[in-house]
Length: 216
Ligand code: ATP
Ligand code: MG
View 1 (cartoon, helix red, strand yellow):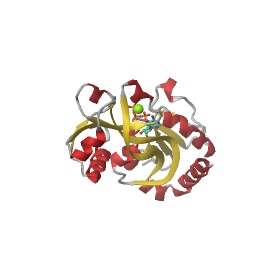
View 2: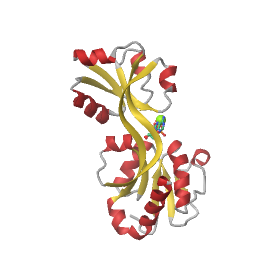
View 3: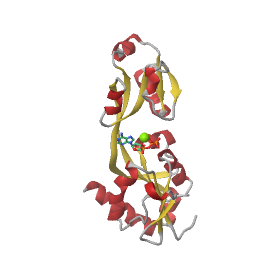
View 4: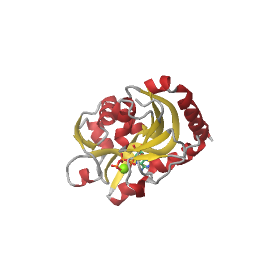
């Protein structure tokens, strides 16, 4: 671990955009836009702070292993990862959405659950889905997907999906409807446990700035 540098892992898109004001509150301004630059390591106005631009699901892995000191990751991603080796000191209240069960319009989900029917569930959130349905006493066949879950019930791959929903417009465009809410989702600041001790003097002010900005 390079102890002179603070490395922050972020994913492109909504998390990068919504983290910008929090970084600014900590006095950190990226020197490039990851959408146009194609660079995976981005410098900042601070010579001792750099950003890694990676897939959302990879953020906890980089931070767990100390390849990044800090990161921003959705609760959805953190549950699937498990959170080993990570402190989660701040709920940033960004990238908010909801983990939901959705079905094709016309599928009687409540009746299937009441009957004790076996449900096939397509999702990339296998851990979340397994825990949720086990808690309801519903037996499921899990089908692991990596994206575009909405397609699965339309072509008979599954009865239902477990996916993130914000406006519901993607569900609607595909004749699906949300039938049950699993949990509220937002993104958290995650910190490598060793870095928290070894780089405490420099990491603590960043955590504090994020905390204050997220609450405000
Ligand atoms: P990709 O879209 O590249 O396959 P991804 O879906 O994991 O990857 P994003 O779509 O950028 O990446 O989502 C990143 C995080 O933002 C998710 O882990 C989740 O916490 C949150 N998120 C996802 N979808 C929404 C949404 N519709 N509204 C708000 N937040 C969302
Ligand atoms: Mg996405």
